[in-house]
Length: 287
Image (tube, rainbow, N blue to C red; front, side, top):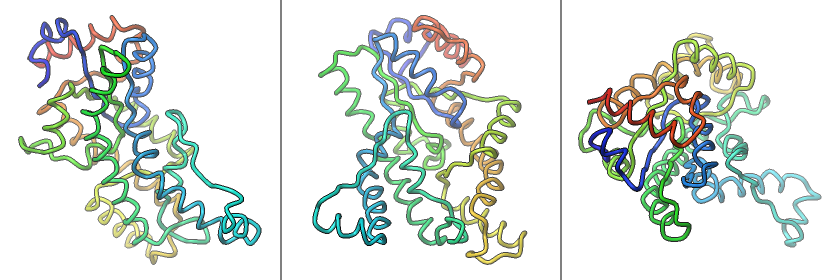
C-alpha cells in the first residue's frame, strides 16, 4: 500500500486517494468537500470516460438519430449544425443514455448484442480512464501545484479486477499511486439505493459473465424473448442482484489493497483535517 501506517499517512506531504464503492454512498460528496479546501485535485474517472474515451461514440450515436429526421439530416450534411455532448462532473446523462438498456425497441430498448457491445466499450473506457490516474497526478502537481489528489472512481471498478490476484494489473497500478478507500454502506443504505434506483433507474455497467447470467435468468423466469423484455423492468430486477454481486468484490478490494470507511463516517466529514483523521483511523484499524 502507498501508506504503510497511519503515521506515514500523516507525515506524507502529498496525499493521494482513490474512492470506490456504489454510487450514492458519498464518493462525490467527499471529493467536493476536499476540492473545496483548495488543496486537493479532483479527478473524476466518469467525466474522463465521457469526454476522452466515449465522447465520439456518444456524439456519433446522437448524429445517427438526428439523420433520421429530414430537417436535421440536411443541416448535418451541409455542416450547418454540429452535435456534441455537454458532459460535466455533475451531469453524465449523455454517457448513461448512450449505454442504454436492453429489451423491446418500442420501449427504448437495445438489442442485447448491441447492449453487450456498448458495455464492452465502457469497460475499456473505464480501465483506460483509471490508468490515466498516474498522468493526472503528475499533471495536477506540474501545472496547478496541488499537493493532494483524489481519484473519484465509478461504481463498476470492481467488475474489471480480481482483488484476490496479487498481480492484478489495474489494482497494482492504482495502489502504487493512491490509497484505495472503500466507502461501505449498511443494509439500510442498500435498501435506500434500491428505492432510489426504482424511482429513477439508470443504466449500469456489468461484468460480462454477470450480465449474461441475469439476462438468461430474466428471460426464463418471465418466459420472454429478447425483444419482449421491458427495458426498465429488467434494470430494476437486476439492480438488487448487482448490489449483492458487487459487495464481496468491493470487500476483497479493501481487504487486499486498501482500507474501509463507512458512508456514515464520510457524511460527517466537513474539512480536510476531518478527512485526514478518518483515514488515519482506517489505517490504524487495518494494522
